[in-house]
Image (spheres, rainbow, N blue to C red):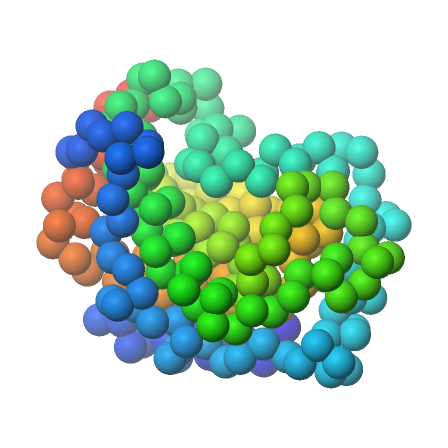
Length: 231
């Protein structure tokens, strides 16, 4: 997906503590603040050579994925920052970090508030909706495939978390990339959906990091996290 790299770089140049329960979390911004339909290109047509090639990629992963890869993809279907625990260490858990947890609940809600309206506009069918040969191992979804919401939120969480703990940036961003890739492993997204999710997540994170209301909660969450990790 090299053709999307320059798009991502160009977009970023344009982007100049709560204790609520997760179900009460409010997004920091919505699609009124970041309209992905004005940023991303439309998805390839269903009968295009690109979509057919991508279906081939999904099927190749399907026949080569191991039980361990499937289990990882199933676990990563959960959208929350605690999926980064394997690179953050044993002290990284919800019970110890209430302010941090509430902050990232809002980050996750932001992804849906920005991405879901764009998905509804493009309505790209999922791989299993175009080919009966595709057998997803994760929960099925009928929402639009473009862009991947999981790749978007994984990238957002990775950027924000690595900004809080730059000492582990490489490991965190590698985990964020795996989080997105596991949507392909799971058979529920095309590779280009994931690439668009990475771009979307990068743009949204850049916007958030320049907002005063976001920074105020970010500072509280970061302080709690670094204290808990002994940094």
